[in-house]
Figure (cartoon, rainbow, N blue to C red):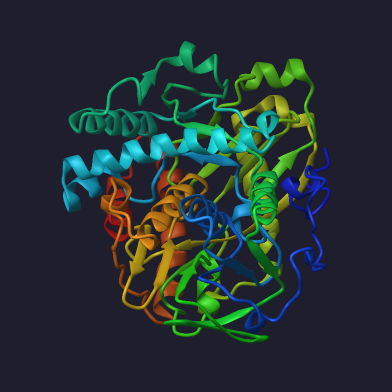
Length: 467
C-alpha cells in the first residue's frame, strides 16, 4: 500500500482560504512599517499574536494594533500543528504545586480547562462549528508499564484535588467505546480537549481582526525588538508597546538565539476512511488520542474522516537551525506509519496522503511563560513545547489584561513573570537534546520487551524536563 503521496500540510489543503505560497495577503496594505502608526506592535501572526490582538481590541477598541509577520498568517506551528485544543501544559501539575503552591497550580489548571471552551465558542462564532469537536482526550495504556504510569498520574492528580469530572480511569470496555487500539489495558480520559482544524481557525481569526481594523502586515521580517522600537527589513517602526509572539522562530531575532529551542514535530494523514471502518476505530465524537509511551505520538479523527497523526523524534538541528527542508523526514514517516498501523491494524490497506511538520518552541526549564514590563512596554509569551493551541489563547487574554493595566485572576497565574534561563551553547545542546530523544525511544523499547518500567531513564527525563 502506498504511504505518503504528498509532502503537504493537510490543514492547508482542507481550507479554501489558505495561501500556501509566498504571495502574501495585501488587502491590509503593503506599507513600510515606518509609515504605520501603532500603539501596540505584535510580532508574529500565529495564535499567540492574533489572540493577543483579538482581546486587546475587545478591551480597548481605540488602540491602534499592528501585527507583523515575516511569511503569512499561521505559517508557523499555529497552522501546522496536530489540531488539539487541549488543557495540557508542558510543565506537570506536580511541578506547579512544588514551585507555586497547590492553589496557584489548580487555578492554572482551571484556567486551561476554561480556555478550551473559550476557543470552541470563538471558533463557532467565526463559523467553524463543523470543524471543531470537543470529544475529550483519551490516553491509552498498551503495556503494563504504561498502565502503571497512568494510574500513578491519576493518584497524584487526586492528591491535588483533581476529581473524576476532570480526569477519570476507563477500563478496556469503556476505552473501546472511544478508541479501539491493540493491546489496550485501559486508559485515562479528560473531557477538556477539542479536535480542531488549526489552519482554518488561525486564518478565520486573522480575517476577523482585519474586519475590525487591526492591521496585519505579511512579508515583513523583524530583525530585533527594542524598547519603543521594532527594527524590520523594511526599516524601523516605533510603538510604545511591543509583543514578541514568535515561538520557535524567536531564535532568528537578534539577542534571542538561546532563549528558545526549536524542536521539530512531524505529522502524517490518511486518505478519507469509510464511515463503518473509522467508526469501529475512533468514536464519531472525535476524541484526540495517544498512548503513554515516552516518545510522544498524538492523533485525531478529522472532520473529513481521516486520521491525522504526529509525533516527536525528528532530530534537533545544530545551531537551532530552522529550514523548510526539515518539515519532512523519511525516517519519521516510517516511524509514524508503523506506530499508527500497530495501534490500528485495520489501516493496513489505507493510504497516507500527507506529510508535514515544523518547529515548536521549548524553554530551558520546559515552562511556558507570559511576560510584560510596563517600564519598557515589552511583552512576550511562548515556550509551549507543542501544547500551544489552548495555551496561546490564555496567553493572549493575559497579555491583553497586562498591557491595559488590569489586575485580574489571569494576571496572577503562576506563569506570569516566569523567567527561564537560556539554553546551553553548542555543541552541548545539540548533544543533549538529541540524546534525550534517543533515551525516550530506548525507554519505550525496554518497556515493550521487558514489561517493566524504565525507571532510571524516567528519572533522567524528569530531571531534564523539570517534571
